[in-house]
Amino acid sequence: MPAEMITSRLAVALLVTLAAGAMRGFSGFGNALVMAPTLSVLYGPAVAVPTVLLVEMVIAAQLVPGALGEARWRDLALLGGPACLAAPFGGYLLVALDPRVVQVAIGATVAAFSLAMLAGWRFSGRRTPAASALVGATSGLMIGVTSVAGPPVILYLLSGRDPPRLSRATLIVFFGLVTAATYPMLILNGLIGERVLWLAAMLAPTLALGVWGGSRLFRSASETLYRRIALVFLFAVALVAIAG
Image (cartoon, rainbow, N blue to C red; front, side, top):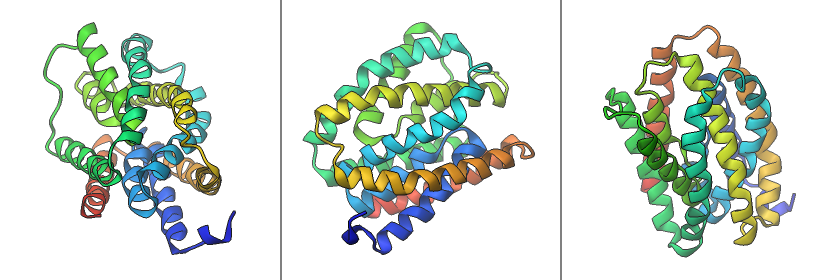
């Protein structure tokens, strides 16, 4: 790693990444929601977004194989297809928009999601194929520009009566698929440079460690407990990103 990257910012990034991994292993979501706002403040969105997306595949490699048998594949088809198609458009916005605008957008997205979940808001419409496609496309657009695809699809899936384990498995596979679909966009837009590769290489093992610990906690924690811990933490991180 270049010597100029070994700073206090890296230490903060490593600590936040460990917490993000624990949240992902614990709840099935949350690592991008934690990492994207923090890394955008530390390094700027053009470094933060591709770094988060690269590191995300480490999580996918850990969690997706075990989730394949429990995921709801009809939901994945209806959500994942539109999401993968929309992701490149989000990548264009990441390059075109002012970095400060993207940073605030990341923080505002995470804050709104956290408050909605803490307030108990759930999607109340019918889960039709058209609604699923719209939610999927929105998530794909968001992952391209912010690396955060979770809020629409999480709120949508949690509105049903599926048990937590099934929803968690579906979310894990969805994030793996959509993240993979962003890589051509990252390469074509020249967003994967030496700095991003070094940072991803440093953060990936830390995230994997956090996921391992969080997965062990999930076995004994209640649904209410893990959601409240995750959401309060997410809201605090979002406020930091908005404040800049």
